[in-house]
Image (spheres, rainbow, N blue to C red):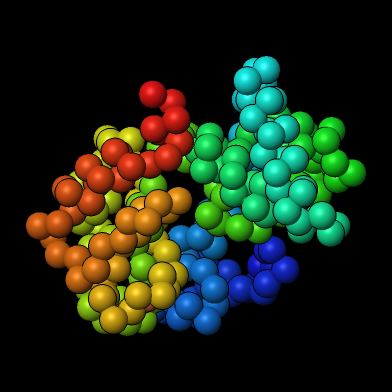
Length: 212
Ligand code: FES
């Protein structure tokens, strides 16, 4: 059984054709992402409606839009960097933000949502800080599965979302953990590092800092 999401064909996560816990990064994503995407509530959870948009938010979106449109004037090429700005600044890209971009550009909110849902790093988790745990082959062989499990246990009840990720390009330091939208990466991670990683994520997360 196959599902088609984001233009790529994947084996269905529940399929018996995949007896392994780990799927090669060749597939581009992991089973848990596939399950998430197969969930019909995916969009409303990761790109929810806020119900309103403040003047301050509108002003910021306009500022980011003008900057990115100036930088990338061709077609829709400004959209990914702009959505990335919104994620970095607000933590969640609400539907209302996409409607605001739509008013400023020639693209419909549906088109913008289509772009946003293609990139997992743009998904929001209620404004929680995020931690990426690489689980591609070199990190997997160095115990990233256990790191992922332990990190999730320790993050339970905290304002942190631990996400399974693909190669972060620092395989020589496997297993690798990264705090997105920051310069912070941790190599050769061990169980005793996990509390410090969670604490760092809470402190350096850009959208949490913006709220203070
Ligand atoms: S496989 Fe983990 S950083 Fe490359």
